Structures are given as C-alpha cells and as structure tokens.
Length: 389
Image 1 (cartoon, rainbow, N blue to C red):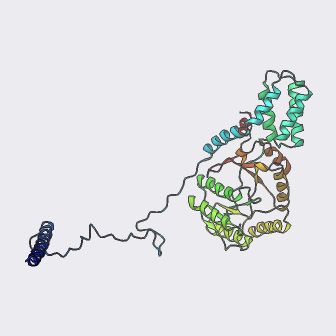
Image 2 (image 1 turned 60 degrees about the vertical axis):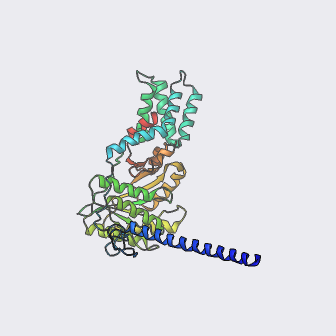
C-alpha cells in the first residue's frame, strides 16, 4: 500500500510541474503579443520592421572634396591670395628687430666714448669692440681715427658722443650707395634678377620673399626654379609662388639648370612680365665646376634678355666666412647687390660694412626673421639708429 502511495504522489508532482510550465509559456506569449501591439503604429501591422526613411536614417557617402577630373571641389571658390606687406611696415619692423639684436654694439661703444677720460686703453677697447662686431680691420681703424679726431682733438663743440658716433657710423655704412633693386628691363623685356649663394644662406626663401615685395608693388613677376638638384627647393619655391599668385617655371629633378633659367626668361618675355627671378643651386666656393656652371646660367639667360641684377645672399651669422664666399662669387658673376639674411640673429652687424668694402657693392636687402614678409630694404640711417638703440 505504501508503495502505491509513493507512486501516486510522484504522478501528482509531475502533473503539477507540467501545468506550471504550460501556464508560464502561455503568459510569455501573451506579453510578447501585447508589446508588439503597443509598438505598432497602426492596427493590423505585422511583425515585419519597415525600412527607415531615406532622408533621415540613410547615410550617404560624402561627395569628393576634389574632383579628379577638374582638380576642384563642388562649388569651390578660387583660393584667396595673400596680400604682402608694403615697404613702410617692413621698415618699421627693420628698426624694431635690429635694435633688439644689434643694440649691444652701440651701447658698448657709447659707454666707452662717454668716459671722462679717453686714454689709450679706452681707444683700444673701442677698437676691440668694433673688430668683434666683424666690421673689419681697415674700416675699424678708419672709424677710430675719425672718432679720436673729433672727440679728442677737436673737442665736442656742443655735440654729444652719441651724435658724433652716429654721424661717423652712418658715413661708414655709406648712405650714398644706390640700394634700389634693378628690376626694370629695356625694350619691353622684363628685368632679370639672378639670385646666387651657398646652401643654407636662405637663398630660395629670399627669392620667395622678393616676389612678395614685387607683388606688393603691383609688378607682374615670374619665378625660375633653377635649383634642379634639390627637389625640396623647387617645391619650396612653388609654394611661395602659389601664395601670392606668381607662376613658377620648373624642370625635372636633376635637369640642366641653365635650360630651366632660359625657359623662365623666355616665358617672361613672351608673357610681358615685369620681372623674372631666377633661383640657382647653392654653390660651394671650393667647387670650381659648379661655379663655372653658374657662369653658364648667366650667359644662357642673356640670350633672351640682359640680367639686370645679381643678388648675392649671405648669412649674417657666418661672419668673416661670408667674406670668403663673397669674393669667390664676385669673381664668377658681377654681383650688383647683397642680401644679408638672419641679421636679427647675429650680434655682428659690422658685416654690413665689411662686405660692402670688400665687393664695392651695397647691401640692398636684409632678412630679419622667418615670417613671409621679414625681408626689408636696407636703410643706412635706420641701421645705425638700431645699433645705438
């Protein structure tokens, strides 16, 4: 009997568990149908999910920024060209930056000349100060003798040591030199400016900055990238030209520099340009072959139009080493003007006097920083005023 009772209890338990499972299943399906009805927008909708509206959820691929056929984007406007600074604002910056970098020389000289007693030791200190500034031996001796005469023999005669020093420094820098750029050609041909110098002096950058000066003066300019041995130089010059809308003539890397220069000047003549600026490869003064090649570039150019200006770019921070470069270049091409770069980074502003004496040609432009308009016409009075602070 006990055996039958156990079986009866087991059967009843299985039946109860089964009924509970069926009830749970039915309840779950009911809840699912209820949720489906609540999420349906309209009665009678099926379980199929409708695709999202195209104008809200569909992500369209972006239109190409630049068309491969035209090189322009949809509705793209022409790039805005930069408007370079004029000469007046450049001269203001010239005075400001020179006074910061070169003021030590003037202050040192004024301190010595303002002593109560100008004895021989003082004059030796003055001479050492000038030599340290890279003015050169001959100009230094000349300046010291002039100062001795005016301050020691003639007396001050109502003038201060600062006034005397300024007058003598201006005379030493020589304000009578013609510092204008020769950028006008004859017979309807463009002026041709050949820019030369060793690598690292800032030659290619100088060409780009001169182009900006010409654009500011409303002159039509063209650049010739004849430094064909450095692809970076060609690209750099192209970038300078693009920023102000100046065309650049270039050739394949490693091509003949003379042929590129020739083509640039030919195009300048054909398109009635005002000025053609030709950048050349940086030449080392101990490479006779390369220097001969520079002479060839000049000769080839002049088959199209005369070279009106040869600018030698020198790094002011190199000091007397720049004098060696200047001498060699002047033997190969007739240098007509000097561009001193990085003058704001050198405390040896006397290089202005030294290089002018060495070549007999004026410093026409000075570089005063890394900005695109940090190239200014050289002004003797502004330079000396900056020295004296």
